Image (tube, rainbow, N blue to C red):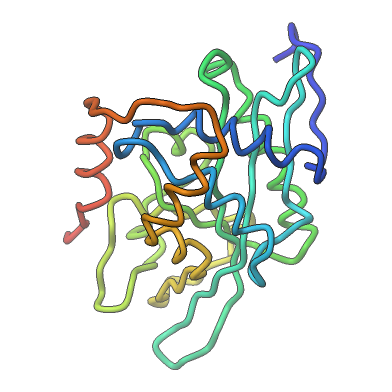
Length: 218
């Protein structure tokens, strides 16, 4: 990071198309043929659960090289008590700048703001290989699960305070912000606003399928 002249700053409206194209470049064919992260960013900004105070980019070499966004979510215990948490994502880095610490820089920078906003827990659904080095742990270790006592291998928890979660069972209720991404026609129409790209298969898609469909049972 030190060798780059980079700036971490809030995203502005003028950045929207560039950051969406960044997400498209970063995620294209990664977890599925094509991707929907650029469309997710587009709809997220107008959603009630979006946290604009945590919408940041890294500007590097005169362009946006990385981006991060968050939205609100909830944990509830077995008695129905609710706890607000922040859900991180998407986090994206242009392919030519990956593995250079930009994602780490955005996470560490925004974690401080997350805590200032009153959240002590961050949750996201992703490849554990990409996040455990940043302090994320398996949801099972914090007794956080989906309804039905399902502990997905890809459900990751980052606590910002040691006593944030006290061991009781917590059910994770994510935002419905990504629901419009299920509309394939709307996604295809929005994707036409960007340069043409060819959809295809690559091994990372099977890796994502395994992580996202696996659960920890013991």
